[in-house]
Image (tube, rainbow, N blue to C red):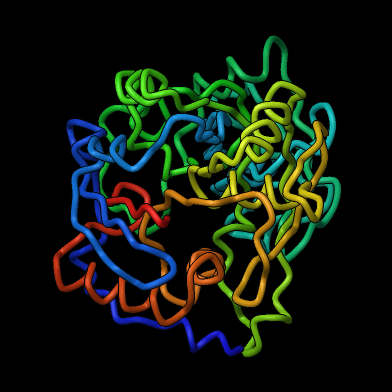
Length: 341
């Protein structure tokens, strides 16, 4: 399959620039994965599509203020950091702008010196490995001087940074939000539980691998950036019990989907573990655990559109996207949602 097979035309004005005032008032397109049937709903109505005994799987990662602005210690030149992932301790993989001038041995100063970073190596695709130097608690310093790493296509300032977090975000470590979860409120989750739906959590810290453009002509040649995940014994038990009892496992977002499918056996059972995944799901993949998927509307030719197409079919998903454009759905991180069942 070619990357161009997943192209669609998207008017720029449909890219959502800010979140709705009420999370659960986003629009919801329901796509029936077998026959391509489409329904147009409001997100809070998603409860109607769940049955007693289903299991909803959410990614409880928390976005860190991963964008830092500093200066070179020796020259005063401006430098921008985007933290991608913690390697170990105070060593991180980062994107650096301007990258060509970020050399091994350079020291970067942030926030009048309360945080410094020494570039100690080169990572994948132009990233840098850095060691941070500071006094106190790293996370508190980030909260003080860091900025939320909004995607480049969002031009408007985010007034409330909590709107780029899910209401159940718990474990810090993501460079981007698991955006399918932004539509949920505590009230909506309570309604699902009252309906007999089990709620399970995984943690996958979102890096930029999910969003890196596919630059190869053949999609099978694209390599995903590895992302760290954790699945608890409690979650594994909830998911496995659901499968054994004939219930459905509904994944919220491509991150939850990739995590579950990374550790599933041929029967769809999963195990508790902490590991890294670089799984790339595209048409032809056979899903083992996930029976339903909640996701946002994604970039043309992206790995995310390919994953969603694998869950249904390329033809059905591209048709659904045509309908989304025609009906003026809002796209990307702060946009509307799709439920595929």
